[in-house]
Every structure is written in structure tokens, then in C-alpha cells.
Length: 101
Image (tube, helix red, strand yellow):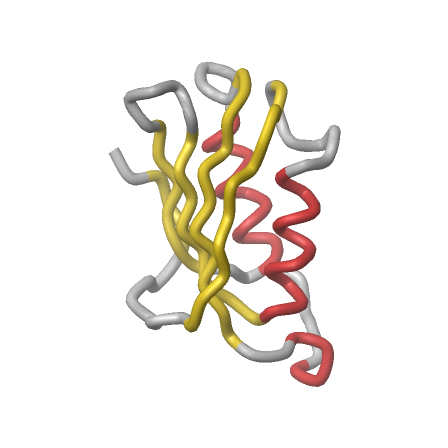
């Protein structure tokens, strides 16, 4: 996990996102978990029945911004066509980041 000074990290927030595109069967969940772990985020990622990927992540606002940028970057596996997202107050319900089946 990367070290971030608290002054740079900001308020703890929750990101709820739906990622559409060619994002299943391309390692998207695996790399999402790795990126979230690298940033020190907690939450889950899952394949949705409609071919999209669902993400719920919590962490400091600055780290979440980096994660949101990564989701749209060429570094994310597959082909991301769109990311529908909302940010709200964190609940603290997650202890780590993992795949939800």
C-alpha cells in the first residue's frame, strides 16, 4: 500500500460506480483489486449480469480521485466505454478490498 500524508488524503468518501464496455473476462476485477490495494481503499468489485462491472470503494478523497482517474485511463484493462458514478459519505463497512461473487 502506498503511503499518503493525511493532509493530502482528505475526507473519507464512498464511490459507487458502474463501468460499461469490454470489462468482463479481461482481468478487470483483478486489476481493480490491485489498484485499490495500492491506494489503500476498501470495498468490492463484481461482474454484473448485464456485462458491466460494479464497484463500491471507500477511502480518502484524494486517493479516490486517483482511483476514479485510473478507471478511465488506458491502464485499466479491457475497454471502458463509460463510468457512471456517485460519491457519498463512507459507511466504514469494508475491511479490505475484494471481489464479490
